[in-house]
Image (cartoon, rainbow, N blue to C red; front, side):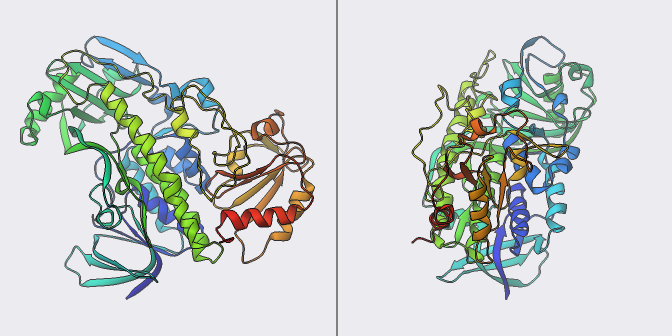
Length: 538
């Protein structure tokens, strides 16, 4: 019998990220993945700026960027009759306009999943005290009041192994075994449309290098498809949409037929093409009705499936475990009450519901569910979802409301108004430390952070007084003084504080408490805040 605090089922980006985050919290975990290795096809490709902020805080941002493509090599979205034919339209995604880029110190990244996963795996394996086992399948789960017992089977005929864990994270994808136990039903729309993704080798630069894009949509009466940029040179994906609507079945896609369709989409009947792989899949827009059952948790595609139009699947999944892991760590270390774990579902399920709906509406606006004889361009929100990326707000017992209203926006999907209102992502502002320019985002990640105004010494002293082995790690910074300068003089306005005020940011980078001014007894105030957030007052 193997004993471990946390068992992670699934070795994709969500499971690997959970392993890294647990290790950085000092929590031992075992990850099991039924496949022999990491992904062998591109699958997801787009990592949005909010997720890249998280990977920056973990310490892996530059490794991911090195494995992916620079933003300037994928700056457009193009609609065309064929790559060599008439261009219908091109757009710069709204996420990349200067105003939206100012919301974060980092940019998004295009890194195909089969390039991303090896980076995450190597990083996870280098973290103590994590253990990763590929070629290992979980075949059974039982839980009781004290823990979870899982049965593992090596796929090379090895004997069964029993694992006893305190908690289990199901990150095992859309066919999740853990979901069958946890979820009572999936809410939403199954089988929105079907697709085939062909990975191939061909040099498409003659028709792409002067208009670098992440996506090249091909619109023909008998073919609706998308060229997916992978390395922007000789490795690409070709995604054919709505197969049934055009009379295709999975059996139609021999290598010869795939080459014919790629050549048709490129508009070059003699294009040299090598087929590298093929996968047939069906898009759904569904969310599990619950994310937690006792000691079992769902994350990623096990918790929600969404059409890829907008690129939110991977991002929503890894942000799930960013939310969950610090809470698990707090309970396992004895710093938090069990009720804190209920806030995972309370906070993340509404986010998945909103995001899945937006992804579905993107798909519907492009005519993915019916045959289209003419090009149908997507709604204006497509790839312009700044509000979804940065503007989600949590309401739970893991947040202490301060009575302030939300920042008004006319469209919560496309518009983001930076705010430090409790429940919001702590906004980006440029600061100065000696000769170093850094973002507030660089102060967060993995621990609680207290930020005060230039006259907030009493809050700093209170945070120091509360430090003990029985409490979560807490660091405090005074902004506007000698430690952290505020060269642009906008930090206080961005965080809504007076000079003697303070704000508390959770390990996942979300504001959980704010006091605009000073307090008569700061230590007592912070004590009550932590008791509330960590479910210790129950």
